Length: 280
Ligand code: C2E
Ligand code: MG
Ligand code: MG
Ligand code: MG
Image 1 (cartoon, rainbow, N blue to C red):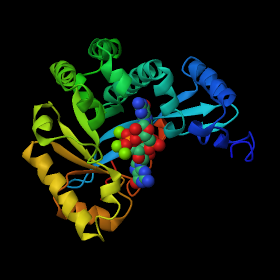
Image 2 (spheres, protein in one colour):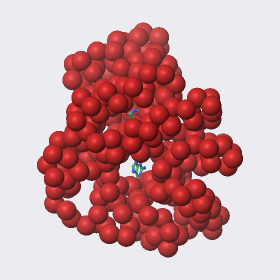
Image 3 (cartoon, rainbow, N blue to C red):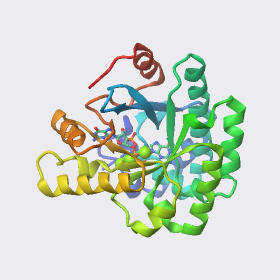
Image 4 (tube, helix red, strand yellow):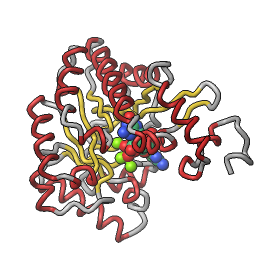
């Protein structure tokens, strides 16, 4: 399919899993050089309080601005980066860039917590906590202005090590979220042992929350679970007013989704942030 659609545009990378070996190699080669070539960029998606309508934070989402293939979304290159180990240097770049940017906004008198997605390989590295500490120090960023998003699968993979790593992060003062919650298989007993701050309800539950009674009940249960564990609950993928209203009725505190804003390039996010505009 990639061949049929031609080599212009990012269809070239559209289905990395089905690409020929040579295309994969070429992509890997390009991706290896992307950080140093300045081809990676972070977009920021606001997280909004349903109570105040204010921006409470943002999630940093990486994009690859390829000179020939344009803006490539993460789903098209993160899997390859994971497989090849390139995710470690990409993850390092993401962490540094998010801290650099958060420090700038903090100095501009509008501190905002930026949450970064951590990959499984990054999380498995024993040096991660030290890397985070060094990066915060290098940019003079208060640890409370950095969040890390982890997934259930990562946490469950090596539970003892996960708990240890997370305690190290907590000691620094970084906020920890469990991302895409509900899609994995966490047992409640283990969840209790992870020092988490935020539970992010996966988009797939939000999709039909306003129409489907079962989904509504599931979301209600997830929100109750978050509350029982004393976590802040964030719903992702909120696209409609009715979803937003429903989440509010169910007691969800923070939302993220196209209804409020798409992920924005830094200058646009900054304009939004400094305008102080309320969106609910
Ligand atoms: P995620 O962490 O669950 O991020 C949320 C994804 O949902 C983002 O896609 C975001 O643009 C999208 N989204 C937000 N609101 C809506 C909405 O209302 N409707 C719909 N349909 N989608 C919405 P994006 O930016 O394409 O990122 C996809 C995934 O790639 C992320 O899922 C995350 O797993 C991964 N990713 C992104 N940036 C990084 C990164 O810097 N490092 C790592 N390791 N993974 C990353
Ligand atoms: Mg995320
Ligand atoms: Mg997510
Ligand atoms: Mg998701």
